[in-house]
Amino acid sequence: MRAMFQSATPPIPDEEARLRTLEALKLMETAPDVEFDSLVELAARMLDLPTVMLSLIDRDRQWIKAGTGLRFRETPRDIAFCNATIAQTGLLEIPDALHDRRFRDNPLVTGTPGIRYYGGVPIFARDEDGVQHAIGAFCGIDTRPRTFDDAQRAALGHFARLAEALIAARSAATAAIGLADRLHAQNRVIWQRKTTLNQAERMAGIGSWRYEIASGALSWSDGVFRIHDLEPGDPPAVEQALDFYPPHERARIAALLEAAVNDGKGYRFESDFDTAKGRRRRVRALGEVEMDGDRPVAVVGVFQDITRTYALEQRLRRAARIDEVTQIGNRVGFNRALDSALARTDADSADGADTWLLLIDIDGVRRAADLHGRALADHVLRVVARRLVQPHLADSYAARIDAETFAVVVTDPMLCAGIEGVIDHILDDLARPVETGDGPIAVQGTIGFARANADHPTSRTLIQAAQAALDEAKRSDRGAARGRR
Image 1 (tube, rainbow, N blue to C red):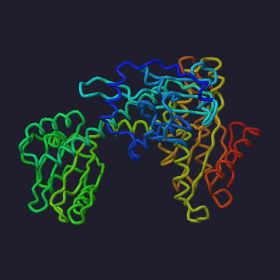
Image 2: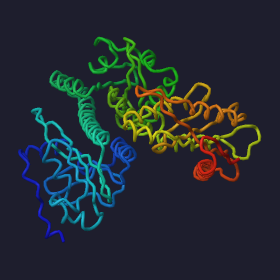
Image 3: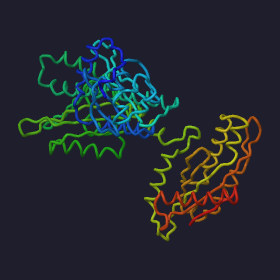
Image 4: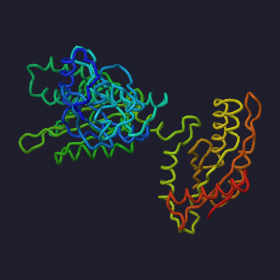
């Protein structure tokens, strides 16, 4: 079957330079990395894809550095979709490979895994002259035809850029710690090495440090001073250096350093961090023990400012849980909130520790869309969402889980004790017309509610109970509520 497939990918300019750049990164055939694995898993959840992967394109093959839902680690290059991706500068999107003349005969389409949808963005790395080369791709695959909206395409691009940042940081960190280890022993080339290290540190937001166990002396590279917002000079003592971390982190970090000194254990941690100028940053530190025979003599390590990468990760994680239109929870966030609430609730307790689930169907949104357009309907949805996060719903979690369906998870003991009053208040709020530039829009809510108990103690059974109550209310009395205890 493969012999019948002819790759339509054009030759890539500067292929040899591209291959040298990939080789210099030393990523091929490396062990799994938690950062790359977490990135593809987050992308798979956010984009609702069974398969997401970060692939690297060698001379003759595609090798998967990280991936979800995969049964293979590599493929021949000539059948790899990502090989076509690296031949361009932006997104390659194939809604249905069976109807794409370039790929319809591809064995990855006609056989296992049966690719139908493919979306990929090239991953770039710079060579020693600063020239960018596409070394691989960050891509999503589905066995069903589909298309991405603009937000999903943008998210895929953000994930690709984050993958590039992780690759650059990994490469720079490896180079920096290697330089730091050799710096002490190679005094005759110290100036050259220090210059190279400082350049690498500036590019990657990294610094190196060394702690002499016998004397307690601490030395920092310029990069560490830069991250601390301090001028290069004499570093503070270890005890004063801990003051840059939040109080609750100091004991943990001190314990890691002590274990390294006493037991020879390397360590790695991330933490918030306040610089000498009061700027909040996120930092990552790696420490390794230097041995003289069987005796530890020093701890050397790398200190990295990961503020931007961390902020991007947090934004992506938040986007995965937030509804784009209403800016309250989405289905993913709702599932997590409900599972968390049920984990804290004893379904058989008699002490008032309850979880109530309210499913709310909104009338009026579809009519607003038909009469006035989608933009005004979205405004109505946002107003409804604001009415479900009012202060009187203390500690409740509100989410939009379908087009016109919302959910509220109620756990506050006082609200649970008076749940009927809470529901009446919500129905009254939802019955108020929504004011718009085209005049008031009539809306109302119909509610099905259920309490976690022995009959429905899990999220699945609780949702089923609330949905049954909602269906009953919609059939018999829209604008009212029905419940299951």
